[in-house]
Amino acid sequence: MFKKIIVLALIPAVIVLAIYLFGVYQNNRIVSYPEKARMQLQLEKSIQWLVNNESEILLQTNPVLWWMLYETQKISQDERIAELLKKYLQKNRGINKSVWGALFDGQKRQGLGAFSVEGLPYYNQHFIYALNCAADIANELSIVAEQNTAAFCHQSNYFYRPACVTHQLMGLHFLFTEQCHFLSDIDEVSRALQGDIVGQLTWDIRVVDVYLQRVLLLLISGAEVRVKPVWIQQVLDHQQADGGWGGFVSLLGSDTGRSLGFGARGLSLGHEKSDFHATAQGVYILVYLLNSNFRV
Image (cartoon, rainbow, N blue to C red; front, side, top):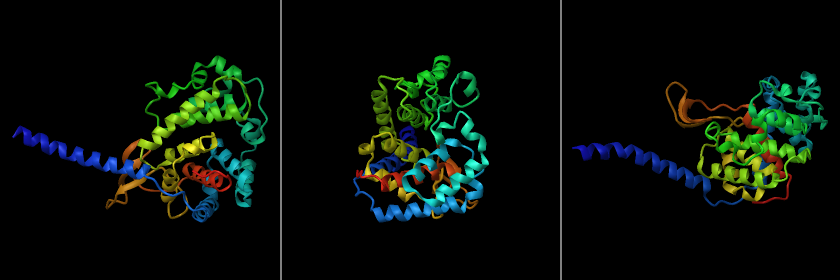
């Protein structure tokens, strides 16, 4: 009797494991590189989503998301994105005088210390330090200096934060592009973080916001050759009908309109809805791929 109970208890676990392993296979299978025509079509849909949701996204003040569109527009020269950026900068005139100004005008702010990033999330503190080559911030805040080391996200406090590694690599990307010359081992640390992200993309099959962020960071940090064609395919396959991407992927429907699916931190109940955070990254990915000579 006891053995039967054990067997019955194991059956659901085996089914879940089998489903997960199939998902891992699907997420890492060998596929052809997506056709350029398909990427162009889906890019157009995603830009149209931005245009259609202009009033909503202009309420989103996250400067890094707008920097993604800024970088996208520099590559694509799309007038619609340029117009959205113009309206954002008009609406947020103080951004260029703030600690985030370097994202858009390339001018580093001087005399920044811990006081200038007080109250911000740890990764934003690292971004601002890197964007402005503000050595004093790292000298005064150990949490900022620690993000210059490869093992930072392996600490227990940060290990379970899905975007920790991508945020850290973005900070290093800013250190590199702003030519701060603070870290003699920046290439080594970046490669270690890229390896962590490859592992995450291999085993974390949830094609939600952080999945796109991982693909994007590998691309813009110089690790294009480590991006599997299937990961790009997954990004394309999970674009929603309205042209955007979101932070929830439905697995099972329900009578209430909510469903069981993958969210930011694992299985949860929710509904699929495009949002600016994910879509800005999706647009950047497609523009980058369509305007580079890189082929996986």
